[in-house]
Amino acid sequence: MRLNSDELKILEERSRLLRLQIFDYAKKYGGYHFGGSLSSVEILVDLYQKILTDQDRFILSKGHASLAWYPLLEERGYHPRITEHPDRDEENGIHCTTGSLGMGLPTGVGMAMAKKIMKKEGRVYVLLGEAELQEGTAWESLLLASQYKLDNLTGIIDYNHSVGSGKLEEILSLGNLKQKLNAFDAYVLNIDGHSHQEIINALTATQREKCTMIIANTIKGKGVRFMEEDQYSWHAKSPNKDQLRQLYEELGGKLNES
Image (cartoon, rainbow, N blue to C red; front, side):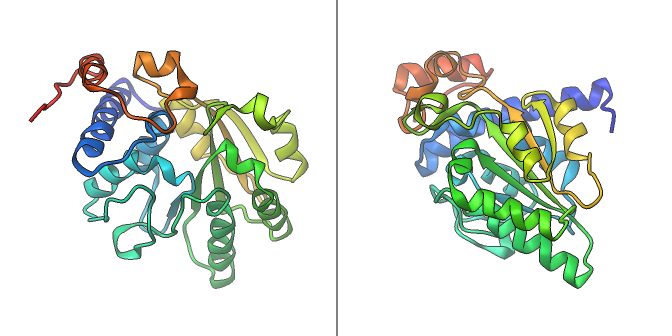
């Protein structure tokens, strides 16, 4: 799917507004985890603006990024309960309780298997954080995806090289991730996770009898300069008033201080 210039501008503008909504929602409902929410923005926007159909299912396995998800659900007419991590609510587009690492991909495998058995249309998309690949459940899930040829399953890894307490490579490196995923018989794509065109290309690419795994290289805190420059500090803290004014200005918005 080749995006024309108008489509690209719409997606870029929606991404800018979603970054502002992350902080609007945090101010209104509480919550933090800004770094990992900001890094996943383009992926979520492209899924909800261009990809997901009524037959598809989406799981936000990196549940701490929920502040970037709720506005998109509401835009589709859902009314999710705004919590720090998503609680399962099928009627409002939340198909899995997430937040604990390594829960989303196993559930996605089960959903994809069920679709195959019942001969139902649609794909299952799962957005993971790279720290979830430090969990055994992720690799067990990939074994099952290979065994049952789940070519209706797409996993997207928000690969910002950061986990909750620091730099991924210093805490528990994943090494050559593409090589590892290939060894589990996945169809692997390595992309710029902030490029709408590359994301769309990857989300629409499939290979028969293989699950798709997308390594989306991202920047933690993307769009907010001081968060990008100090990525490992912004997993679990909130900006002060001066920082909020600065980031709203950077993102082309205005902080409501009431």
